[in-house]
Length: 402
Image (tube, rainbow, N blue to C red):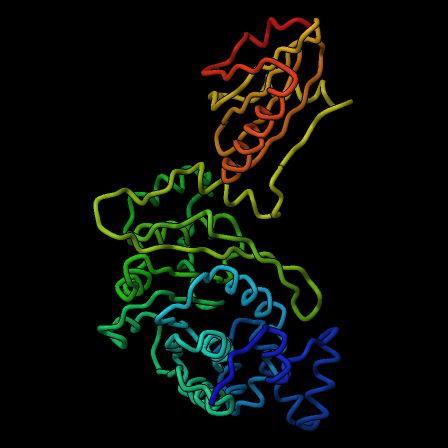
């Protein structure tokens, strides 16, 4: 009988997935376990993987479950961070999860253990990988997972009649390499061009398997902004809606301790028809700019007040979102708190008639947080001043008294 797991760390320990300081330490462990000759053979195919030959590498490591688990240690930080995020994303036990490109079943079997009431289906193009997955499930006593040999493109046919709450892909999918343009067009022009395209046929097939309200989660190696925008458009042009509020950026360390940050894209199948699912360019750009995980992209105040005023004057075109004015008694002056939008940014600009200036620039994705901060200021200021809410800018800032 299978046991429900408590944590990712428990699972890794149970499987023997280890953390190595570097490749040298990893190869020393492989040498000790499999012998020098086998270790050198494996090192040779690993170098071919780095050169892009995935087929030879995976054919070699999927020869046995134990060997494939050993090489899973090279991705332990990637898997650890992804599974931790996924656990926070899943708020209720799904009925069916489909793992595209399941490999040796490490992720699929974790989910089967974590959510024993769910059914897990792992798919991989490699029969050897599927064999490893089945053996891992048997080793762990897992009864709610099954594994099939199938490519991502064939998934809809392989699982006809199934409806998944969650379809996930880790380092498997991604946009087709873009054909070389005579010149690299700007991102906004690329967005406008891609808005007229059809979506990815692979994603369209996967969307057929999603239940209404189900999610496609892509944590794939889409590294540069151009490819990321292309991948987003590949997804939304199939009719799925990218939920930027649920999307995330995950950072992990590779075996040489190099930090890598990649997007997790969450795309939802809508209930019903007729609504436009197409994001605007500012939404996409806001997400791409949020890569460093910082809620505030820029914060200027105090001695930097002059810079705050200068930047506010230069920002444009901008539109007024909301604002408030606090008048203090006994000649204490007036304090303005305004929120403006310029492109994919929100500018929170605070200023007084005595020369105080403060500016915070945030991603448009942080609009809810910015509005909450404004409303807190309103409530706090009402305790010691007269507060008026503004429907537009209260004064011409250019003529404001210093």
